[in-house]
Length: 76
Image (tube, rainbow, N blue to C red; front, side):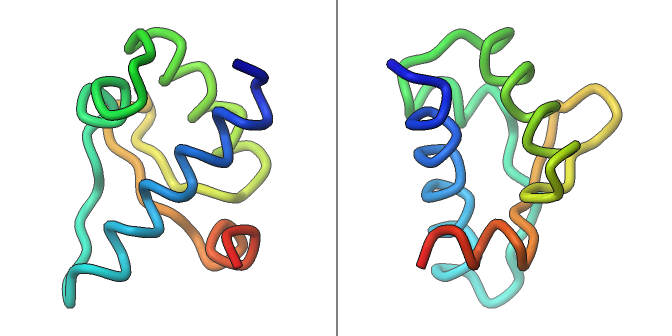
């Protein structure tokens, strides 16, 4: 699967977290990897790139992530 497609799928998953919770919390990278059938290492690598682009906020080790407003705009 193309990196761009994978990033978009991650954004969609994180956007769903925000839309379905009145108080959204950070999402575990292991959960993201499992939902998208990706390795945790690959997921964390993509999250690092997405954090640098400003579409997600992630912990230093990319263990937990949350979508940003910029990321939400890309999902619409």
